[in-house]
Image 1 (cartoon, one colour):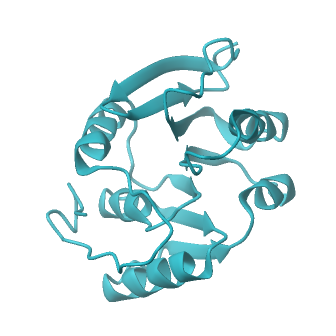
Image 2 (image 1 turned 90 degrees about the horizontal axis):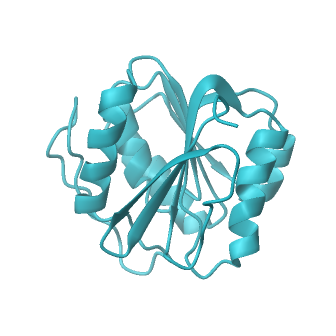
Length: 182
């Protein structure tokens, strides 16, 4: 796994064996950030990496200039790895929280500029929808904010009132949502 652009460009991150994760592929991540770079100025924004796993997306966001990134995962080895990697790379604006994503979202009050969620692919499709619903019900995105959900082809959001785009890179699908769409 590598950081593609920014302050830590080309930095390799070696993920320990045994983490219960499926990191976003470098190809899919590079494609995602090419899309986002056209619409988002990362400098100073507040981002949430939900179901953070290895922290792959968090590191990329920090490297590109995000003001703060909150990485949330419930697995202790994942949060420990993200914390250690953030410390190694001096990413002081990357905060790691070990929590159930659903409970975390329900307790949040402050909105984010960007939310990236990569739930486990074996999670029930209805729970993917629940993630999106909680974010919009609780107004956890700033008015011009973007929510990206990474998912498999078995999960569909085509009827959601806030979806504005969907991209596929091999087996990886990204659905994009905004409060401005409805």
